[in-house]
Length: 257
Figure: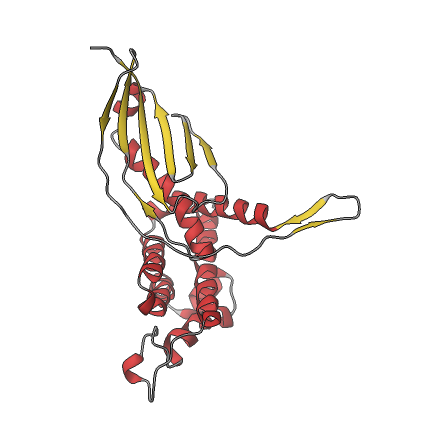
């Protein structure tokens, strides 16, 4: 039998247009390409077989990129575990397929603005700025998630808020709850995250105080509950996205000292 010359790992995600632009990540082991609903990397056989955790580690890299989009746009995603294809010297292939989906999907991207000066030089490009921010966010998620249970809990709660919209505010509030537990008090969390009391309280007002169907204290509300308005949900999402981002910055600062 002809020898294996490369091992190809492939993930599928949906929706296929989940990413605005293709992503290419250069690694020591190869180049991870993510675009049009597919993530793919080709590895040397000796590299693949020498590291039992390589599939898991690469899956985390793919997921981190998708999670960054989710936190910043309230879009969710569906991601498979990787399928493996051994490519042989004579061109034949052996496929080892294991398909398992992890999550699900939806949302809209707002219009972008490019601002230029009188000479035509771009001084502001909202799309470029957003994609750069997503890449930075994904790198921090990938770096800290495995070692920090609080961050992992927060990201899972956000994913649940997208998959379970009838309890969205309940899941979003869990993010602040996780921070309260991690830091021991509201005062300590606010100081560590370098935020204002108003930023901290924003999700609490929506999840606890208003008579909303998606809120935490529905059974205690007097009168008829109402559905949260889109603007209220947007405020809640942005407030907890800010908390996640601030916590990532806190972890990064701690790791550099």
